[in-house]
Amino acid sequence: MNIQEQFIDRRHFLKLGATEAVMLAIASNLCWRTKPVQAAELPTDTLSKPDAALQKLLEGNQRFTRHQPQYPHQSHARMQELAQTQHPFATVLTCADSRVPVELLFDQGIGDIFDIRVAGNIATPETIGSIEYAVALLGTPVVMVLGHERCGAVTAAVNNNVTLPGEIGSFVEAILPAVAKVKGLSGDAVDNAVIANVHYQIEQLKRSPVLTERLRSGDLKIVGGRYDLDTGTVKILI
Image (tube, rainbow, N blue to C red):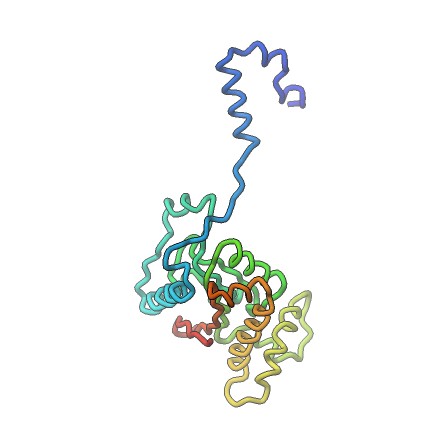
């Protein structure tokens, strides 16, 4: 079909009845004008408070570790409710490791967690910008940086003696300052570095003027956590 066949000739349009013309105009309007997705109005319930939001995360993790999940907010109705808006009560920056599925280990559903995943849970400009978006525009009251046991990215940083292909070495470089802080300490070198890396990445987040403003006002809490692959438990570090 050529361009001339795709569009209604003006003379043909004028021959349409009034009703047909109106219906055609409405259909055209619906096709070409769509409502953009926008953030919801900031929540005003108890989950807008940092401590309550953090408690909700931890309660979900307790259900997960006890094998008593509720699988909340996973219905078709929930999906439709959030089709044009979102108001997550928590933001989690965690590793891209396939064994750390955030919504599952906190027993949450669609629209509950603003989930940012990158190898080594590192605070790059892109991840910081994503967190700023969640906090400033979506009103998320709690941010968790979640490291995990036996993290491959951290292990690579601890054993920084191999040239890695492609851009893999970029996240190792982002973890090395944390590794340096715990080098030579007693205990497991990788686990020490996992915990140090969580602290270090939080330090990077706190350099953001957007986040520090919310921290000062008490509208935001930033915490660190360590996920245990063996037990499924999230332990709060700070």
